[in-house]
Image 1 (cartoon, rainbow, N blue to C red):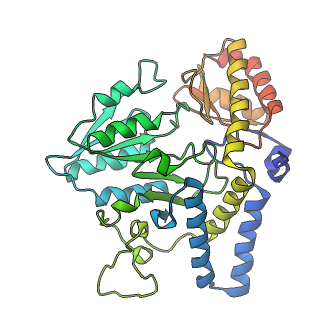
Image 2: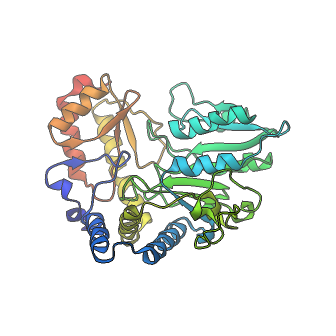
Image 3: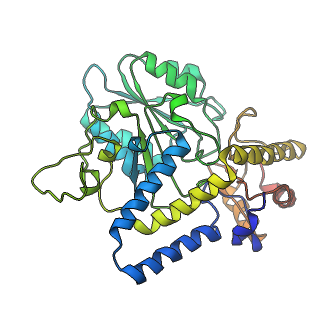
Length: 375
């Protein structure tokens, strides 16, 4: 695919760090410029901006095979999950929330914050090598007192991908709801919320969806809308955002009830531009391209005796390599214009469709040069 020239960073860098932030495209830059032009031309252009917000909602819903009314848009994943958490009731008979060793801090913090409201937080633990969470470890903690199971699709620390279907089926057998954090997967792995049979799913635009920070989304299964009323609110969460009725809280009957105040308008332009790029490429093609690059990394790591940070069978857009001094290694690679990142003694390498095998060759030439920093 000939999209690489739309990402100017590759003129000077080898960027393999999408798990931190997607590379900036000329499309997204132009979208921001379009927003600024509209500000100059119209000043306030609210009717159009609300139309754009709904376009964004439809595009995200289509990406996930959800209905537009099942999508809430937010400033971040955390905002959406906090609204969701506020809508849950923790009774003595069903008050357990299951989290995992692979959670991103934000989701873990939000669920632990519910302890003051009566939630009991338990953890599904990783294996001894911290490379996967076996299904039996979920079976140990999910029971009939479980209200919700919170699962990250891909671990931000090492790229471990969780097999969601058996966990979701297990949770539902016990009457529990399931929330999936798809931030490190959406845009690089096809996600179908109906096929997964998941209750809630959240993510954001800044990584594999190629946009920017400041825009997130929350999927809420339609059958749960009326059952869950968040204690958070705002004028965009109302049944009629144009009513301006200050005498009551009248939440939307759709997932918009999980929204709050004025959206980040500039980021709506950027998010739509990023999604259009993904739509042109197609997520299935992204997955195929990324699998080839990840396979190359695995093979090169094995050839050079480098230790992987995840299980061999995982198919994730991120792969990790163990390092003795991850910060020094990231810095050394940056000196050679190779941009990656790190977490927990793992060098994180996360290609997208804009990367190629030459990028991997350059990466491993540098890693071999700095072998002393590899585990």
